[in-house]
Amino acid sequence: MGRSAARLALACAPALVLLFSATGIDPATAATTHTIVIEAVTYRPESVTVKRGDTVLWINKDPFPHTVTAKGVFDSHVILPGRSWKYTPRKTGDHAYTCTLHPTMRGTLKVQ
Image 1 (tube, rainbow, N blue to C red):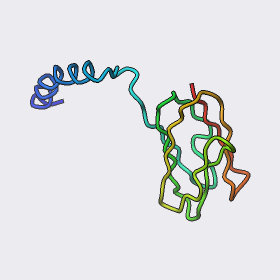
Image 2: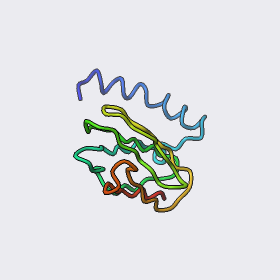
Image 3: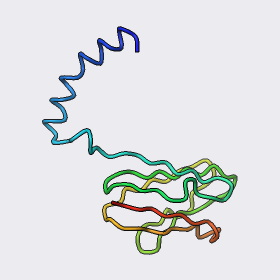
Image 4: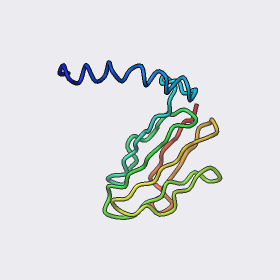
């Protein structure tokens, strides 16, 4: 890191502490985005563990549509090639999901 960047980081640190204190956000427990790539008719990674409130983003890199469907929990509907879909889980549990268009595609979303 260059000197200018280091100075900027140090200058901003007190403001960030005040921001997190005022909003009640703990940076250590702030929500995270997890990315799952749909490619070669698979979900990569196949299993992901997240925390409640995190965001899970599925990106379709295949040349044809897919879905991300856990019956009764979430359903992306059709995700076209080059598009994405995101989901923010609110309940804990292990959720097996599949592509309704390609039932051999399977994944698991573990929410803590």
